[in-house]
Image 1 (cartoon, helix red, strand yellow):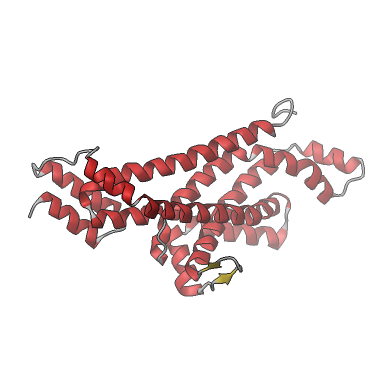
Image 2 (tube, rainbow, N blue to C red):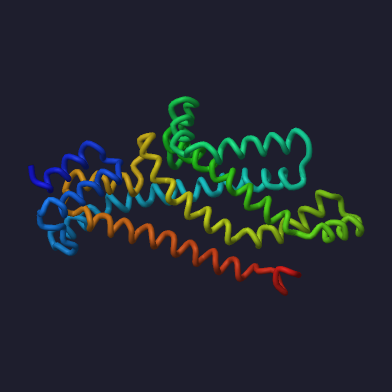
Length: 268
């Protein structure tokens, strides 16, 4: 059997295995066969004929990433505030849940959401989000919330206690002092950590194949099976998509961080 045939069988048997594809590519070289060439017109034509299929997967990736990041923020910021300023049972509960979520593999969380918890679909009128999509958003979002809570816990804790004491001295309640003094500074300082978390969630969306969702990376595997000689071209194409997504988002967050930077620097 030729090395090319080996690649086809490996891709077909394990469409979600990056290691399988890598092993088959190595066999092409070690077996003495002609190596795959980047830039074959026929292979690139195949990629561009299926560009709409890959872009559809990219839209799924973007949708999951945005929804999960927003859910992570809505849950993670209050959780970080509870860990910083809370006491007693609420603080211990939030800390315990965060440890469990951060210590559990994301694929286990997704499988639990979809197959065990059975998250239902939601009809938004314009579009219906299936149970698999909702499971992906909840799984990725809660996992992100566990990490975002640590980002916000650190940035809230970085605000000097003297500022909160000064706010209390002029008549603010503790909640008002946190809201008007600590939170604005913490949000500004959290931008670098938030950038990193966005990139992590974007990459974690590739795990949703475990619950049947076809995002960008999963759709690229489908094309590996259909035409194995275009493996490198497909990889380059989806890598370019991932690069554009991460680069544009990071630059936008860089601009946001600079625009809302604390006047006078961190010591202000």
